[in-house]
Structures are given as structure tokens and as C-alpha cells.
Amino acid sequence: MKILRTAVVGLGRIGWRFHVPEIVKNKGFELMAVVDPVAERLDEARLEFGVKTYEDHNNMFKAQEIDLVVIASPTKFHCEHTIAAFENDCHVFCDKPMASSLDEADAMIDSMNRYGKKMMIYQPHRARNEFIALKDIINSGIIGPVFMIRRANSGYNRRNDWQAFRQNAGGMLNNYGAHYIDQTLHLSGSKSKRIVCFLRSIASLGDADDVVKAIIETESGIIIDLEINQASAHPIRPWQILGKRGSVVFDEEQKAWKIRYYEEEELEDINIQEGLAAKNRRYGSGETIPWQEKIIPISEYHSVDFYQKCYEYFVMGHKSFVPVEETREVMRIISECRKFSNG
Ligand SMILES: NC(=O)c1ccc[n+]([C@@H]2O[C@H](COP(=O)([O-])OP(=O)(O)OC[C@H]3O[C@@H](n4cnc5c(N)ncnc54)[C@H](O)[C@@H]3O)[C@@H](O)[C@H]2O)c1
Image (cartoon, rainbow, N blue to C red; front, top):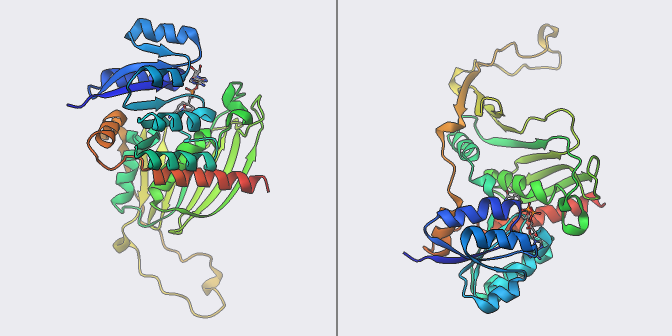
């Protein structure tokens, strides 16, 4: 079995708590080195895993042979770290958002192609059992053709870390937006055609957006209604997917999808009324929709093991679980959202 000699750049929340333990537990990977400018984080890694540590990624590339670099540094470094990895003959598994801007994302893709390497962006929301269950429900056709996807995240957070500031490529459009645009676009199976978007900074202690309202019309005609609201005292429903014959919502307490739908053949026959005087001065057709309900607990589904998907892509030559072209489209939408909001 080929073992991928792996390095992690950035030992913060996602680097230390997710990537490092996953690499260590997955037998296709060997943690060879870590990079972080904070000395005690390097000490911690040396003590716990016996790996080589570096304050600067360039020193690591000079000293060691690495196959895969996992980039979990702050967003504004993703482009620089990715290109350095390609220049040193490594593949890249980079955390979301791919980069600070569409130009940076394109520079990363150009570099990947120039050096003949591979890159995948870590979009964990695609892999969750909640999302796998939803795809299954929609693909079953139970609610008919989907015409609208509503996705929201809400809370009240006076954010005070680097993600609160524009100069760090922070803000919720980049941060959670990268997750939800990826999810909703993947569900719609189409690119975006038109976008309107409004960004505000309300509760945050920084200057980056913490309220995002975007409407994206896909080439396939689906309307994506996206709201990320970190200044909302009341919760907003996280998901509603609307189809011609029903809709699906997520129940956060029950951890289940709730489907309300009807069967076409159970509808009454109704005739179209002739003329311009509504019959009996009555509103509505008088029919009762024969609604049926289903509850699908997400525990019936398994989450995808992302590092297994990495191994299949980087080593076994399988199609990427998150193809770079799809992430480029996410980056393009983020860029268009920002342009619209800035007028
Ligand atoms: N996929 C997800 O679900 C998810 C979750 C959290 C964060 N992220 C992404 O991961 C990235 C890191 O976020 P975080 O929340 O872990 O941040 P963090 O602040 O917790 O950690 C960042 C780490 O990078 C280190 N660092 C700073 N400058 C560096 C440099 N030049 N080279 C190497 N390391 C450097 C810091 O010392 C720190 O240890 C961001 O792009 C973020 O959007 C993704």
C-alpha cells in the first residue's frame, strides 16, 4: 500500500483538531512534518507525534520529501502555501475557502496544471450524513423537480478573531459561505447564472461581513436563497428544499429530515374556470391537497470519510470528491456576491 508522506501547515482549530488526528489514524497517510509560526504549537506536535516541525514552510520543503501538503493556515495564506507545495512536487489538500479571491484561486489552479499535481478543497459539509440523506431524498423524486433551495445559518456572535477582519479574508461570505454555496450548488447540479447579494457587518467586532443575504439563480433555473446571519436573536430554519410536489425541512431537535408531499395520482381533477367572474365569488379551487408526511432520521445514513476520499483521489486516481472546477465556481460566486454588494 502506498503511504502518502503528509505535512500539515497551520496547527489551529481545524489543523490540530481535525486534520492531524485524521492523518494519524488513517493508514494510507504518515504525518511527516508540521508548520506553524507559534513555537508552543510545534513543541506540542513534536511531543505528541514525534514529527519534524518548522516555523516556515520553505524550510520544510528544503529539508524533507513530502507527497501531500494539508493547508490549514489562515485563508490569506492558502494561495502562497499551495503554490509553494506545487513548486516542491507535492499534491495539496486545502481547507475552505480555497483562497482570498478568485484571482488567487485561478493562480492556484494554473500552478497545479503547470506542475502536473492534484488539489482538492476540504468541504466537509458535503460529506455529512445529513447532506448525504438529503441528496438521497431529492434524488428519489418524492418532492418532484426542485425549484428553490433555502439554506440558512443563524446565531448572535460578536466575533473577535482574525475571521472578523477583511484584511485577513475573513467574514461570513468567505467563511460559512464557502460551505453553503458549495452545498447548494452541488444539490442543484448546475452553475450560477445571476446573483444578488447584500453584505453587512452588524454584531461582529471586526469590519468583515457577518450578515450575508444572497439569491443565486442557477443555469438550470433553481433559485438558491442563502442567508448567513450572525446577528439574529431568533434562529432561522437551516434548510428548506421546495419541489413541485412537496418540500423538505430539517428538524434540528430530532436530527431528521421532514418531508411533506403528495402523490400526483391522488390529486382531484379540477377544471379551469372559464370567464372573468370567479364562480360563486369563491377564493381557491376548494380542493384539499392530500399531503403525506415522512420523517427520515439522519442516523440512517453514514458520513463520508474525507481522508478515505483523499486517498482514493491522490493515490488511486479516482475522481475527486470535490472537483476543483466546482470549487472554482464557488469562488466565482463569492467574488460576484462581493461585487454586487459593493455596488
Ligand atoms: N473545513 C472546515 O470546516 C473549517 C473549519 C475551521 C476552519 N477552516 C478553515 O481553515 C483555515 C484555518 O482556520 P482555523 O479556524 O483553524 O484558524 P486558527 O486561527 O484556529 O488556526 C490558524 C493556525 O495557523 C497558524 N498560522 C498563522 N500564520 C501561519 C503561516 N504563515 N504559516 C503556517 N501557519 C500559520 C496559526 O498560528 C494557527 O495555529 C481557514 O482558512 C478556515 O476558513 C475550515
